[in-house]
Image 1 (cartoon, rainbow, N blue to C red):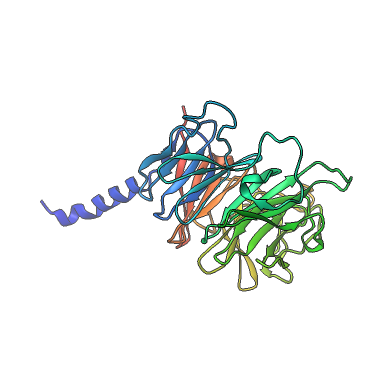
Image 2 (cartoon, rainbow, N blue to C red; image 1 turned 120 degrees about the horizontal axis):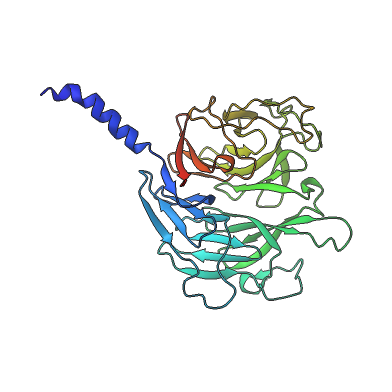
Length: 355
């Protein structure tokens, strides 16, 4: 038998098997990547957090994170972050839960039974009450950052966000307030990310731009012409002095310090680097400016080269990046997880089980 002739077919079979999507028991709602490049997925409508190896092997961080909790508060939430020691932090409204690599779930922060808001107070994390937490990120040093929405409208000035840091020393400090900070003013944050030195990045849903907050509190706009087009926006790539964004959402920062975000109305993944804005994945047809007041592109589903691939995530999107700079995207409209490889290919990494 000529084994050399069989080798190409065997290699193709192995590659095909490796690319077969992982089957998820339910919709993926949150995603992070640990230090071993395992993809950690929060499974919707279940109490489980799944672990998927880069090769597609399935295990669980915890199959029931409520096990052992016999009275409230109960562990809950979908949005996660992960620190350098592979501890997962899960937000559940006004509480934060910590899940260690062994799957042990503990209460981390928040005071769910207090009826009075403690606006403006910082101090030990054990004493702080949080507003509704919408975003959470961990930096490599173990600091935790959160964005809290306050909709009380106590002064008739509308909703606003408070950005806070939970330090490794257990102290909570307020970094910014979108009501009082003129450079940060917005009542709709749609994404948050953090880099290796503690710079925070926020997607401003109202302004259609991305802003940066340095550790000392300085705020700058790094892309998008904030508030230029409240309605009927354009997406314009190129130099950041002229580039316009449509609907920036979830943010991550790669090893080079480049800022990458998803756009939930364009169905694309976009990068800010070298003072330029450009699409790195997605090729959806952008509808005419007058078609939808919020701006919209046609959704789709197509794997392949990144700039020919199609996505469909208007209902929500989350991203994570591994050590090899592969990006994993929860493609909400297609109910699956897509992988954007570092060499520019899009594949379906995992998909929801169908009956």
